[in-house]
Length: 267
Image 1: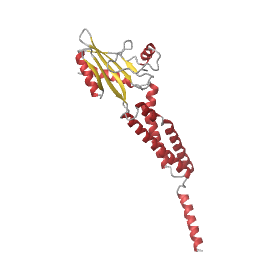
Image 2 (image 1 turned 180 degrees about the vertical axis):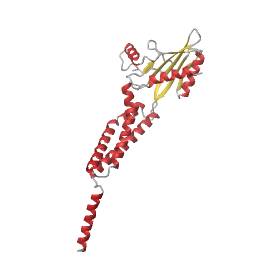
Image 3 (image 1 turned 90 degrees about the vertical axis):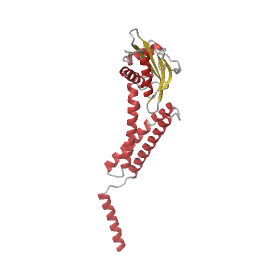
Image 4 (image 1 turned 30 degrees about the horizontal axis):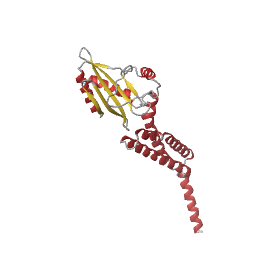
């Protein structure tokens, strides 16, 4: 009788616990663990790939491609986490904290991908060679253009047409200061931005440098060319070219505009 009473009490307590608490669901628990574990793994892979590429331990483009290959897996973990949360809410089961954490982390990674790569990539044209003078672009002396620099265009005329259409605002500037002073100020601005000076020649008014873009620090080669004008002022042309990739995500055009504006403001 005593054993029977204890069994009835235990069964009653279990029923009361399930009535007042939320029952557990192995499926929701598994899906949540999958989403959370996957999201953590993808974030670690992204950080490692981008950091190794940043410091040149692995190929920069390879590290970037590895990062972007995480897009679909991150979408999958986000969907799995969302489904687990819906099931947990609908059936009033637990635990759901793993699914919630997995969803937050997956969405965080997807948001970074969108704003850092996808959105700029869809708004910027497929170009990586930007200059203030499309008819007679400044030519490199110390640094070399990549062999496939015209990609994705078939000719210089096609590149010029695309440049004029997409970047009509990229133009040379005239600065009311002597060429020697302007070139020296250009060098100072380049060094302040962490660019590596590759060539600097005052008589020809020509400077070449390597600039860096994004967290990976993609290398872009830059020319600043200062030409004297009869009234004593200076005309400044620029060219900024990515070493890898087809689209530069708008980095080169933004660099040219920002640098020329800063040079105009330099005292």
